[in-house]
Length: 85
Image 1 (cartoon, rainbow, N blue to C red):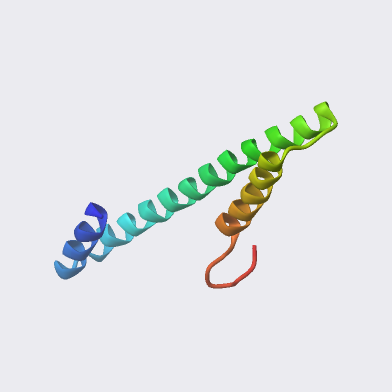
Image 2: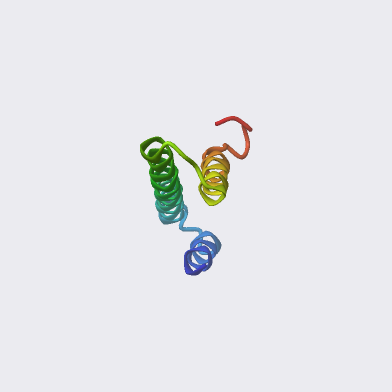
């Protein structure tokens, strides 16, 4: 939130170059956050898939966790404006 106030101040002061640098930093932070989310849900997904395969059985909680992980990965990976993945 602090970055948004700083961006506003830079724009109001007419400091466009520094404002653009801050926007680039915010974009990179957003991409890193998205990748970390996908990575975390991928670990959960793989762990439960490996458990199912190794134990030749499944539990309801594993199935719910798998569905949830897939849903969250899709949600995190979806492009807002383009609507694709």
